[in-house]
Length: 156
View 1: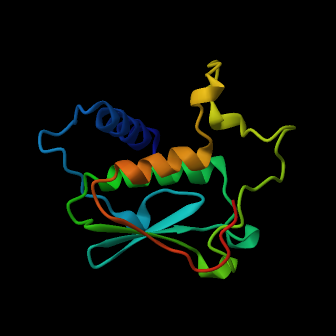
View 2: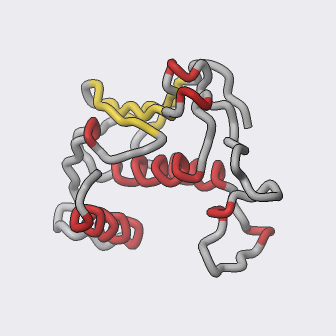
View 3: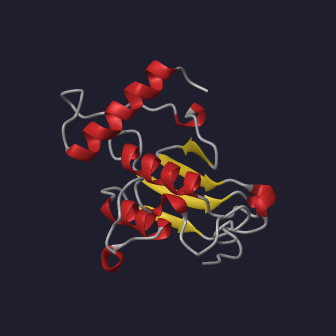
């Protein structure tokens, strides 16, 4: 993993990007996607295409909160990387599925992921977004084309 100072700097970059206040005057980022620290997705560049793989092969690329957060982070950050012209979203082929749906192993009772609401926030269910909805909004707000290469079953 990366040091605490790098994580703190990345958090500041994320917050500044979300709020519209860039840390650097040009609002550009030069990301080494192949070594970007991720757990449940992988990233690589193929020419000017950022390839994002849902990557949990033993679980058939099943969806998690971590995956959701990483996907949102990467899509948002890719907007600032001038090397990225297109984003391609696919599943790790070793998983045998694009995505097996929500990973329900180890989930507490009920169908809501604990991270669907910020800690300490009650939320309003009529306006709530599940994890998939939050990731979909990141794709929708992308100024770069996002292509889904559905390479197997897609559940959920």
